[in-house]
Every structure is written in C-alpha cells, then in structure tokens.
Image 1: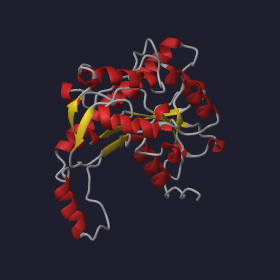
Image 2 (image 1 turned 30 degrees about the horizontal axis):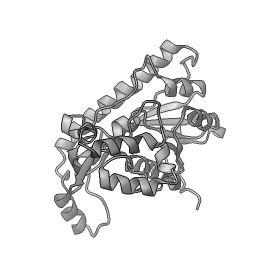
Image 3 (image 1 turned 120 degrees about the horizontal axis):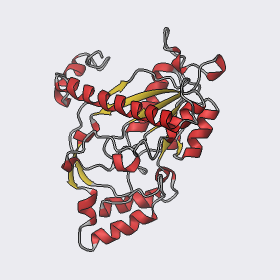
Image 4 (image 1 turned 90 degrees about the horizontal axis):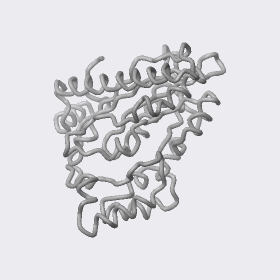
Length: 287
C-alpha cells in the first residue's frame, strides 16, 4: 500500500528531491545486538512523515543461511546476530557498503546508516560500553560524510537508548572466544560470516532477556552539507566528527532525561495506559 500522507505542518526536510530538497542521511547508534534499531526508526518515520527511508544493514541479515547462523548463535553464542529475528528487506533495507550508500543518495533516496557496525552492536555491557559509539577514526574513514557532501544530503543524527537494559549479559565476545574448545568453534563460525567492514569480528555476546524498559529516540537538528567540498579530506573529517559529537551528546541527553521519567519501568506505564483503554501512550519529556 502507498505510504500515509505526511501530517499537516510536517518538516520540509523529508520532501521528495524532485521538489528541490536533497536526500536525508539519518545516522544512528547501534544498541546492543542492533536488531531493533533499524525497523523501529524506519517504521516511525514512515508513520509520522510518510517518507520511506532505505536502511543499510549488515550483509548477514540478507544471507540465505541466516536461519542456520541464528541456530548456531543459540548453541554457541556467536555468529548469528539478529538477522533471523527481523526480515530487514521488509523495511526496504539493503546490504551495507560504500557503493550502496553512494547509489541511494545519488538517486535522492533518504537513507539510514549505523557507522558503528558490528563492533557497536556486539559491545560489552559488562565492560561499561553501554551506549558508546565505536566508529572508525575520522582520519581513517569519513566516507559517509564525503558521500553526503557529494550529493548535498542533509544529515540527521538519531540517538536511541533503552534496548541495552533488556538483556543480562553472561559472556561478552572476548570471554566467549576465550572459552576452551567452544571459543575456537565460535571463531571459525565468525570467519565464515559475511563481512560488512574489513577486519570486523562477527561474534555475538551471550545474554539472557529481561523485562524490557522504555525506548527513547531523539532526532537531532539537521546538518547541511552544501558548504562541504567532498574532495576536501579535512573538511569531510570535520563533518564526520561533528555528526559523531552531536550523536554522543544526544545519547547523554536521553540518558539524563530517562532518569527522571516516572514511566520508565514497564508496570507503571502499563497501569496508566490500561486505565486509558490503551487509547494512547503515557507522556514523555519534550526536548
């Protein structure tokens, strides 16, 4: 079915490029495991603004063997990730690569990217890495900034918190790989996984699910790239660092606001919403 029309007064940032507005590149942080990040953001933008965003997802999410990989992950704790839990193609996602990003923005398509990749999705909450960004250094890789500048894309940081409190981590990737015998099998399985970025380690931590809390998202102020020369490496690195810095600040902002939310936990939130016959959600803070 066609997407719903945008609400009256919607921001012009997401209008079609044919109307003279450049594409939007949404840049987000991966929460633990990462499987809920992409569909929630894409679905909400479609519902609220009537715009389809094409997300870039890890190639393992499109692998024909993802069911097998997911089974291995259940048995060993490594290799499968979230590919078997969400059909990313339903949300218009494509396998992540520099070429894919180039093609999408060159066609004027709104795009969603997670620069932290597997390292960020498979972080160790046991080592205090919750809601940290694990991006390549700007001096080594500022590719998304360069491509965004090439097509005059507007960059919008998207911060997300809440998912990582829904898991109790038993073994992080390093601990899993250090296990006798089993660690070797996990390493072999990771070596066979499709690669999203050279040198990555596709080893999923082992966790137990907990009662989920509330998720919080914050769309940051749009960052124009029209004044950035895509051929200027220093300027692109500065743009990359700006996006990273603003996303980090947005994450800290959400975490501080969450601490004061009386409906952060499930039971108080459900009790109030039930009293309203599930007709609306409990309020949240205003940025």
